[in-house]
Image 1 (cartoon, one colour):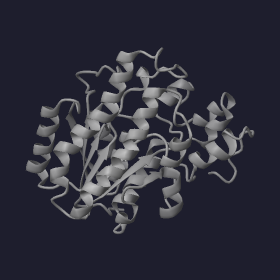
Image 2 (tube, rainbow, N blue to C red):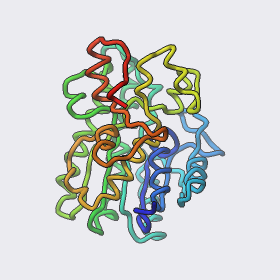
Image 3 (cartoon, rainbow, N blue to C red):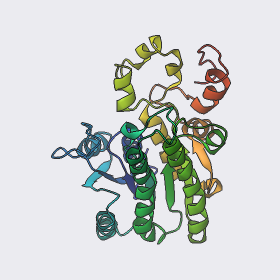
Image 4 (spheres, rainbow, N blue to C red):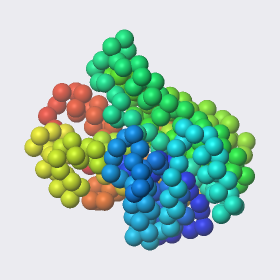
Length: 303
């Protein structure tokens, strides 16, 4: 399937997790995919994780696409400006921007009130989660809006409905993830005159590299983690939200979603894609109807 053949995408923050899954699936669909991040084989970021942007590029190639990895710190305006200029010089266009910059799990202090939470870590989290997205939009969107039907996807954690009703157990994390949803809503108003679309998108309980390490398992044997946490059976691979992005990018009527908050599980039901194992996990519905309702783990009807 090459539904995105001829399209150019930028996955900002494509080193690991959702960004990597999205970049690979955009490549599978035929797009040329630029991947940015701070960790290369030569140098790690403050995150100190082993995954690199070169590995993501290689995964895209293996999947049949074309990946171009560019080291970029999205908090440094000059680097982001240079990135946008390079894409314009090399491709002359940009059709898809996925803002997935994050890298702040290590900064969150869960169940800690703001007056006890490290202020330094909290403010750094907001810089990584919000400022980086604003800087990227500032420099990249002038290229994207040159052509009709451009798509901006702001990646976050949680839907508008869920985050509106639930405190995300850390003031700084709560602000980070809810702000991105509002950012997508505002972007939708700004790009609409150019016939472009902006949405917020969340995966469900994603089996990122960090999550798999936490449960001491891997993608091949992830179901073993259910012995420790039965609800983990509702989890999804990073490729699942990647397929959600590819479906949105290939939808000629994607403007119908402009300004909305979407989830991988919701879009799977609409577009008909599945996770790598053929399932269609609907985590956010499960979270409310089963986990938070205090019911025993049972994913029947949710996968």
